[in-house]
Length: 131
Image (cartoon, rainbow, N blue to C red; front, side):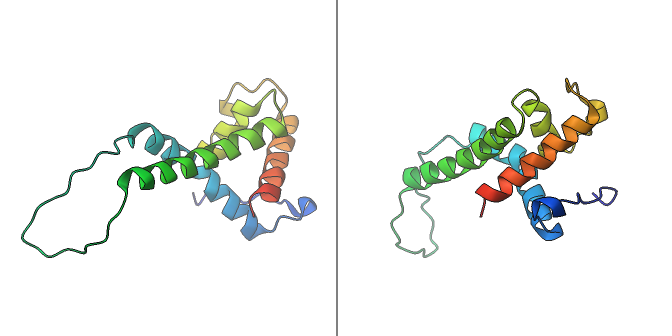
């Protein structure tokens, strides 16, 4: 994304580097949704090979459940902060921050200025929650 410039969120006490951290956190949203939808098989058989392996006992079902909860919480965090920022256009905010779709290419039922103020508020709220 070399053509994208960083937002100036100094009035929200969000530095350039904190903004980038939040931005890249949001860009993982689609990956998380895909993994939540596809990674549902907890039953894994042991592979028998001639190679020595560790004898660590692991619970694959528990590991999968923990991973799915973590992914669900991350997705839910993004969605809830978008709703708190502006409940009328939260879907457009999610598309913008997770997919990078510009305001001009969305059906946001508000003005450009109102949309970008709501997006800035989203990053402010996300910054407060995500430590």
